[in-house]
Length: 223
Image 1 (cartoon, rainbow, N blue to C red):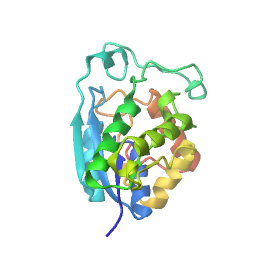
Image 2: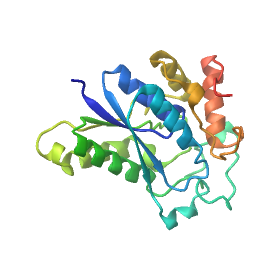
Image 3: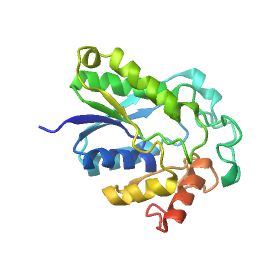
Image 4: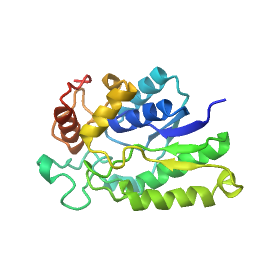
């Protein structure tokens, strides 16, 4: 029987690559997607399509937290930042930061893993080509790995419950190349923060995605 892993799946480039990385490493993935009021809720349709393609069971959770509206990723009345690619991640924590998002997501994933006996939680966090979110950095993920071990039945009783972030030290070019290697269906993915009918091409996520494909020498199949 395969070991299982709970994979946080937004439907974007990084999380889809992480899911297929888990499959390639021999895990039976169980996907977890979260609706938290994000303006680009169309990413959840992508998550469903990716999970279906991967034949991974998908759990969807809804978080209705009014205080998240201070983020421009949640509040449509706030303007999304548009900065030059070289400046992304260089100007402090941007307005698209959602307070405690990865803390909440990883807690939900650890809870699901504990309930179903999964041996790992997988997150597509990246700390090189990224917007500068504090909950995507190695110290945070190392700390949460300790929390998962100490705060779950599985971990406290000597079972294995790892927190795996396979993309953490890759740039977007490396992520695109890894996606190609593991057969991730990137044509199904959605990364744009604006959440329109087509990617805006201006937000951090669009620019970093374009940079990755350009530097990898590959066409983006989702465009």
